[in-house]
Image (cartoon, rainbow, N blue to C red; front, side, top):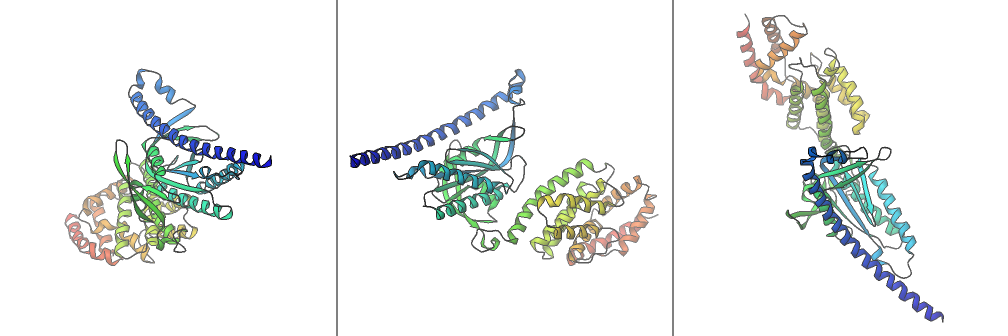
Length: 463
């Protein structure tokens, strides 16, 4: 009798295994149908938005309960865990569900380290995205780092138990529409071609692989080691090139194994992140600088940031020194939003407030502030970095547009009653430029000859 019951139990488990496999297949079909519906729904909303002013549809779409936003650069990660398809009769399905939950909790802990938003979990799949809600240029790198840690977490989990779980991950960067809802706990529902393509990429992958689209590849290829994987047919778009990520580049990895970032990686990352800081500071200058700053305006800051980079490269600076120098150049005149005469000091105050939010160390911030203060006239640089920013700050003295730029500075000083007539200004300029010297070999080579010709031009203007 016991033998008969055992046989029946085995047959019952076999049926359950077959049913699980069928359900897995059906779930994949449902996902594909869902993605297609989302694509059609997006097309519908685009049509509706054109005619929203003819009805109350626009008000419904932008109600208090939810808000639809557009993001131009979002990196979507889609991960799927495979384990239920390999269920055997002796396995405890409740224990498997607990293991799946444990892995998803681990994934949550990983993305919490980065500015990455969890989107949703569906069955044994997990979706998150970088670049939401705060737009940033670093989200492709951060999402790849998170994806690599997810791969490692699954491997470590399998090593501690009976190996069962398999994982495939796909990452794609592009525009999305996001439906934002909730006040206490904000949730995001993203849709669009970027989401659909990421899901399709994952279904094309194999266990343990991290696949990325060519769009993501172009944004992370300087930091991660990638291999060409193949082409993915995309509906209405042709073929999409796919790459696989094998790890961090050896020279940027702490152990050379491509898993843990080293200090060089962090510097590379910070140089990318600099564009986000720059965008914020430029917005601040554009909105808060006095309109009568004809010389110390946004254009001057852009010029100095560009020039320190050019001189820095020519002088052979390391990436870390270049980062420090460019950041100092970005903030060197930011203090004009507070005060004219002591703008260097106020620039250091603003830098000390903003830079910790971007993980600059205290040592880096102190060095940046010292460089900012070195631009106070008359320039007396104490090292190469200070020499470079002083040369970049007064680069116009040796440029062919010296006279029109000089006149803008005169207008700025005139408004503040710091100078008399234009003739007085030209005499002051002649005295200053005659005693001025460039400090770096690069600036002397590029600007000294033109600077001497400017002296003759000023002499001719003096009456």
